[in-house]
Image (cartoon, rainbow, N blue to C red):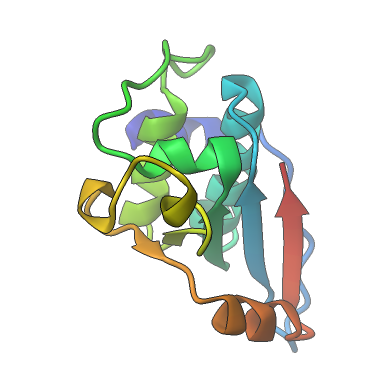
Length: 142
């Protein structure tokens, strides 16, 4: 987490504009299995959580859902922080981000809810849809 905080302090990720009258929330959907793209998604989400104090929700779908599975080995650490996307996701969760897999990920895979990393749950489509419709929610999709 110290490396992540240092990256934020150095401004390695982009700041998200916020309006004082309406606290923004961020929904980050990660569909890709590409580690660099996952890393950038989590760097931006980390900036929101740790730098801007924004509520963040991460939705892992398709290949991105594999980040939620305990038995899937992490990829090699990404430079310059030497953190894997799994490390970055874990740090986001420690910072208060809510992390979920999409509702169709598990039923269409070999895994079960017991295979999910502690703290990661299955999203409810109705809840996600209602969240997306909130005017203060910003979305990023990777």
